[in-house]
Length: 122
Image (cartoon, rainbow, N blue to C red; front, top):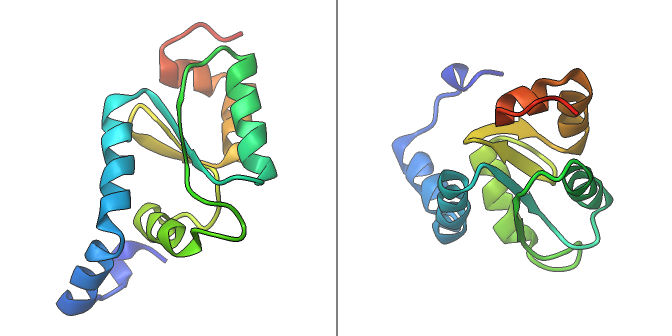
C-alpha cells in the first residue's frame, strides 16, 4: 500500500516521529555522511552476509549495530517504521535505501551496485 493511501491523524504522526527519534537521527546522520550504511543487529545471519559481500567487494561502509534477538527490539522497531522495511539489515547507498542482503546481492550480480557507487563492475 502506498503512503498516499494511508491517512494518519496528526497526533499519531507526531507520536511516530518522536518514537526513538534519537536513534532515527543517528542513522539519518550516518546516511548523510557516508556512501554506504548498513544497519543491523548482532546474531543476524543476513547482516553478516551483507557485510561479507561488501568486504569481499572492498566497498567501505559504516556499520551501525543495535541490539540482538534478546535486546533492543523496541529501538529497532523505530527504524523499521522510519525506513518502511521489516527486517535487518537495512542498507543505504548514497542516501538511497536499497533493502537488505538479498537486494544488495541482486544489485551486485546485475552490476547496478557498481553503477550506484560510481565504480567499474568487478
